[in-house]
Length: 170
Image 1: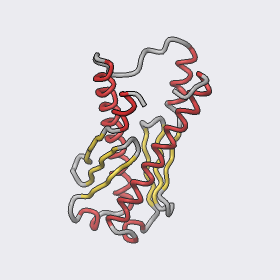
Image 2: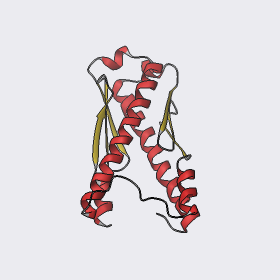
Image 3: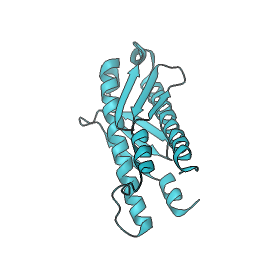
C-alpha cells in the first residue's frame, strides 16, 4: 500500500455526544469502540439510545472526514480540505449517486440496525427491550459490529459505483 492508504488505515478519531454520555472511537478504517459514562447505560432506554447513537455516528463520521483530509494534506504536502471540483458530467453523476448510497449494518443478533444515506443522514434502530436484555459491554460490542458492517458496506458500494462510472475501484 502507499503512504496515504497506510496512514488512513491507522487513523483514530474519538468523539462524544454533546452531553458526554457516550464516546466512540473509530480506528483501523471500520473498527469501533463504544463507551458509556459510568451508570448512564443502566438509566437509558432504547429510543433515547437510538437518538444519541445517530448523533454520535454523524459526529464520528465528520471527525473521520476531517482527519482524512488532514492526513491527505500531510501526504500531499499542501492543504486540501475537500474533494476536487467535478470536471465532467460523469463526475457529477458519480457524486450525486454516491450522496444517495444507502449503507447498512446489523449486530449479529439483529437487535441493532444502523443506516446511513450518503454518510450524512444517520439512523439507528434498537429492537425494543434490547437495553434491558444486553449488558453495557454486550451492547457496546454489538453496536460496534453493526457500525463496522455499515462502514464496510459503504466502502464496497463506493467501489462498485467507481467501477460503474470509471471502470476501476477508486
